[in-house]
Length: 410
Ligand SMILES: Cc1ncc(COP(=O)(O)O)c(C=O)c1O
Image 1 (cartoon, rainbow, N blue to C red):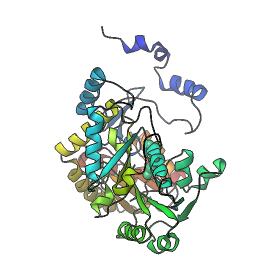
Image 2 (spheres, rainbow, N blue to C red; image 1 turned 135 degrees about the vertical axis):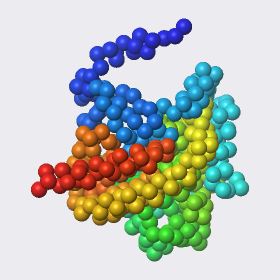
Image 3 (cartoon, rainbow, N blue to C red; image 1 turned 90 degrees about the vertical axis):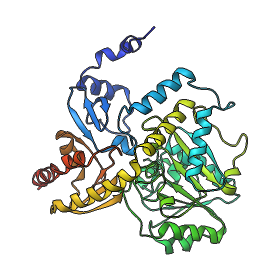
């Protein structure tokens, strides 16, 4: 028997136009994100369609998530095959996809011994990591100015933005923030009381901020000097987004704890906290848990994503597009563009004026999805399957979007 989705969800029948969905949204969904700018009903490859049938080139990928674009056939068949075979069991039991994904993720760390705790999000991966640090017997954690690690009380304690933090204090301590990319600042606070240093290899939410070369290696050295754990938050940067599985490994640095999520499931909610060496054994029975974490469907999604990235050479493709995109943006030679920074397919266009939110709106009207992590920064995080020609289609309209917004803002 096949169930018609509309029979299963009769409630959808009145929600056919964008305005109907948005009216209902305003009355039924908590206002934590502001009013949505569009209602999307379908995605395929690098494109999205809204409720009125208009097509958009997705250069944001659900906030650096859909590394294989939308409705990827391999992920689709892996997920549907798994859900038809075994959709869920409790974590009192093991499943082959869970173990296979744990092995794949562990091998990415380059460590002889590594173990994985599975989660449903990046925030939860960071919560697991936070708890691991507490098991060291030390409690101070060093984080960085501009850092974003999530919104739960633990992850928020490591997140720097006062607008996010202040309403929810007191947050779990003790967390010390130092300037990002500054090894001397790090060295000045790490001592024998510090449990861990948590770093994003590139600060995504802070506007794709790339630290100076050698910063991660210096952090490793400082942690080693004082017996502190180095925890790399690769939730945004990992799983191919920057042209490598893990940015810190690409830089020749190893970590004690690595957190990943976003790209791992291509939109299927799955995250992981991977701990190596001694840190891999700090959490024992009863010390942490999750009902859904490591669910076989989520795990098979992760395995499918990794398999396709490997099969299709998408790490190299992302690296090649890094060079193409950077050169093409600078070649625009537009007075509003002061620079471009990032790695692989996590890139920021830096603007001379704080008009990025208005440029995002103008881009949407023109059929392109991008975002503005800062008022003067446009972020591009397209699927790794995107072509140079598709990127160029956006770059060909970017100058006129910037001109239009600059005119309107004066
Ligand atoms: C570096 C980093 N860590 C953690 C998170 C939180 O992940 P999630 O939204 O999946 O909970 C994010 C989300 O943007 C992130 O960029």
